Length: 479
Image (cartoon, rainbow, N blue to C red; front, top):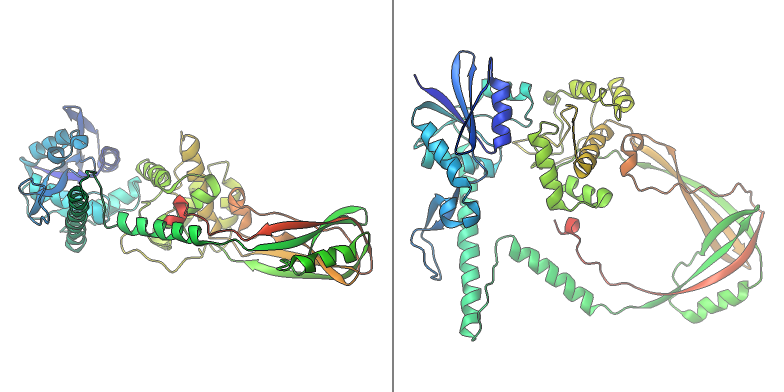
């Protein structure tokens, strides 16, 4: 009697799915150091096998260096890329297991790349025309059992064809233009390997344009006046209300006019403003926030998030959604987070409220936003722990209330020249209490004072400055 063969994208996912679906003992077998799992689920025999990402690559039907070239096909990745030689043994195992399988299920990541990986394995390795499809956003047991129980009868053909088309276009565009560049340089009497591509080209264009802006930039001088003094025996700093003097002579006249003079507090004003609750993380905002708060570049952030997903600690990270649907089990996630002492009190606060998240506009038909599953991480290295903490605290923050900040402005009159001292502080923490370690906020409290108080001026300093060129792209701002 045959069995159902379930194909996963990565070894770690195969193990998680096998553990989730096993009604009894899980049997782990290996062939050429490639592991696969045998389990029984509701009386049915299953074998869970894995790929290691893409097992097939796009290549020319006949290898040439012709330009242009349009005859392409899928071939085993190990045949065209020596760096992918390790994938051959995984493909061999899947082919062997497919021979005695009576049904097939794709359980790769539910996105375009995962669908293409599954499509090629089913069509080329398993020699099948179609397969069933499991869809899940976390690798937790409840989600995987539900995904198996409600699996689709076919793969997502629209997603599969979209992914296949992207791979074909990447090859046709990238390879042909790269060969055109190399050929043109060769005709000029030089040889150099060059590459260009669908993403690489536009990214390079943005960087070049930015560099041209920087080189064309002509700095313009300006001057600022800074007041250092004391108000009711407390130090105070203020800047001339004009901010930037475009004329140095005017700046020097004010400096001379105020030299050796004290000031009077002419006005006190306070203005409160609301700081909106953030929205859940999609991949791009996670990457930009990790770079801002933790100094971890986007590529590393994705790798870390992928590992956290494979360990069942967070949901699938490659998402553009800013939604947290009720179906993810918000109360259960928060309840699980209370078991982690770092988040106990914060999670309890949210559990005692309405538990309505502040969602963004962006959606993703395949996955919700990035959120913690609530499972307690046993061991995380330094950077993994930081990214996990960022994801948890962002998740908690979206259930908070707006924060309130207040800016107090003191107007200091020195011989009819007005200098402004400003201090901003938080008066209502709101969602800040959940996100605190990742906030870069200054709490500036000005001295207690009343209109008419004297400001004893220590010195007024003239700062010679000039406008700055545009900043170069950072890894985060480029994405």
